[in-house]
Image 1 (cartoon, rainbow, N blue to C red):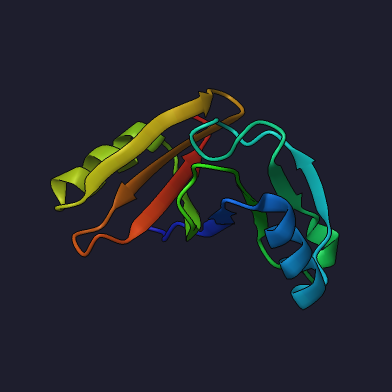
Image 2 (cartoon, rainbow, N blue to C red):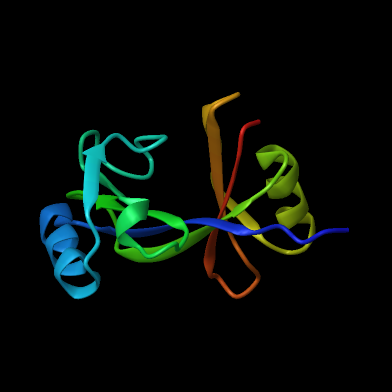
Length: 126
């Protein structure tokens, strides 16, 4: 079985403009602001997609959230089927926190906590 890659990261907090300015200054990242795949991840219009050209070839990412969102750093693993991955995470002792949500055929996401309580994301097209 071939391993599944980390395909996306997120930095979520309450003050999205401040976070984008901070990471832009710190790492030279540029952002395209819009909507996340689901409002569970970020308030509409508050999600800053990191411009891949500004990361030096790293994975895609985003900085978002908004008032009422708990701060966290999260990575997403690419999976063939988000529902199947969430069920497997649960069967191994994890807990589903969100999903599947999004647009089938385009982008579907889910989140779970591992047995130690760490939040992990999964992303796919179904």
